[in-house]
Image 1 (tube, rainbow, N blue to C red):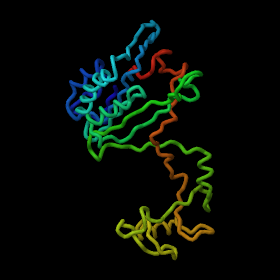
Image 2 (tube, rainbow, N blue to C red; image 1 turned 45 degrees about the vertical axis):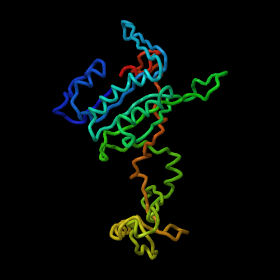
Image 3 (tube, rainbow, N blue to C red; image 1 turned 135 degrees about the vertical axis):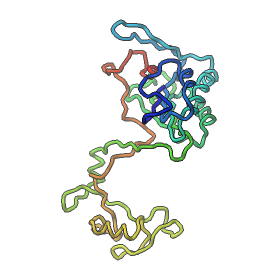
Image 4 (cartoon, one colour; image 1 turned 90 degrees about the vertical axis):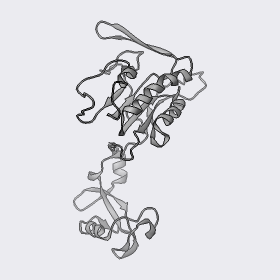
Length: 281
């Protein structure tokens, strides 16, 4: 389990690492003191894991065996209850699991955190060509883990948008226009979203001789025109907006993560051939 406090706190000593059973450690924390909590617990995989640690080859292991799925949920429930208690209203919680019990975990978390505080189910594609659907197996390859994302209850929960760089092929195809200075751009829509209706708050006025409902106020549109960012493209009839490549933050990260590679045999933080990295938490 990993918990974060984003700034110095009078409630929690942020200068130390707490080691021990997470349930015992959580019970020592005050209410509403954690900004972010991520847990990567056992997955109810019905397997044992071991690793030979460091130069001394000390053997460490843990069991991921439970009498039943219900027993696994009963094991995890009090820990999640404590996490909900210590999480700030503006905080975020991520539960990392896989197909073994994810559907049961989701129901449990809806009860504890509130189904209205569920934000996303994130799919982490953790494998590429390798999977467990070997010759003779009768199922599709299991290639992903699941992360359930909940908040502490506030609509103003902390959120920082994440972006990935645009692929060169995307840049070439979507930012194919060049302005007088040689800057790449694409034409963007200026028409009002959600339908052209005053009831939706869409302003109506004339732009470059064209009447319509627009995304921006007339004053803002006139500013864009003065900056040379609004024009009617050749062969077109509707004013468009120049969106420059240099101003793009990239592609917003979605709910399918396929750019985080699994650990390989040469990774510095790999602990053992049979041990999944998650057991460190």
